[in-house]
Length: 110
Image (cartoon, rainbow, N blue to C red; front, side, top):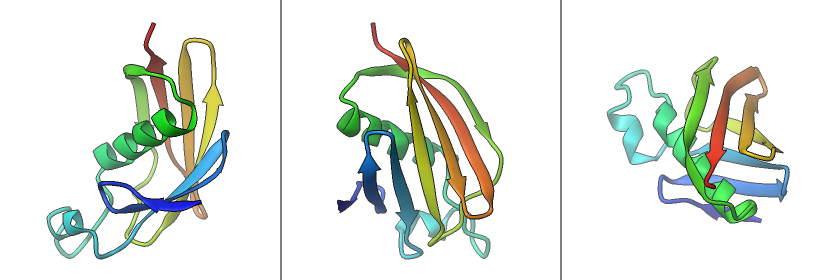
């Protein structure tokens, strides 16, 4: 199922364990982030993952306890988010065709 989120990302949910994201080059934030060298802002990656965790898993998230960025995401680059749903947190690993992009731990609300 494809849908667009508020940031303009095209989301394709594969299962409860993964989904993909693609930010088209026509997304407005690319104009300022960064001119002549556009990349997807890390905060938008984290927020898009958060939104989809709420929809897919249906748990409340109280915060992020760890986020590590390995490489940038470019316009029109598809990334896949793998969800590891643990007892007290959800660990998300994001990869593109060229390797690991991001690993983030979302804390479940108690």
